[in-house]
Length: 302
Image 1 (cartoon, rainbow, N blue to C red):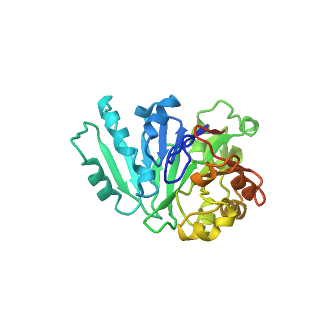
Image 2: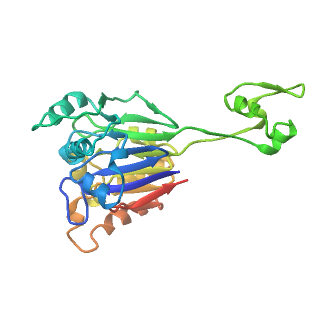
Image 3: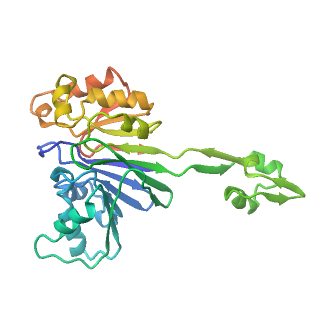
């Protein structure tokens, strides 16, 4: 099971209703953040999410609204006696930016912080899943990320029983891709195994509409997309290197994703009653299974 919790869904400046960008993902023992805007650790506390269990943080780009909460979170981890390593990833110059950032003020840490600069073509392989970065267009080095659960492999017990393998440890060898001999018969993995793709979640970060997002979002269970502006501000969105909710929906449709979440909402739509609805209406004209993110909104993928 994968849990996604939206900790911040506004753009640029926090508002009373929306914090700065951050998405929390829970998978098995892993706790992952995609971006860490100002106020993220307080959002974690409000939602009663154990920030000390966060294992990895993926920064989409080094604009302050996407990383300014990082220093406070790391310092709190130190004050609370963290011992486990923390892994931080990001685009070009992430190592240099983080070194400068963490050096602000008098601060030390007794736990390991592993920082890695990523680019398209890299893969962060972890237990049960991988995270793949891809390039987006935002005027500075910026990345989107694909969280992809490993393929699920299970035995068809009716087929296994036909070979007399219903309780045999040889099923484990078959799952490892090896042939086995049982009761004088050779059994191949494809004789009894069923395979299904793992869940796929895409986070765009801040970006213009590009064909590369379509490519990396293909068949995703969930696309979390920059949707800063409404359709009537498409020219402005392009100039500021962001997307409209309509453009996000176009990507979702082309990529054949299952669900679209609109986030990074400009405060211009939050300052008038019902103003945000135009974003969702624009998207739904093209892609029906779209929702507008709210702070603390939860999505569960089984």
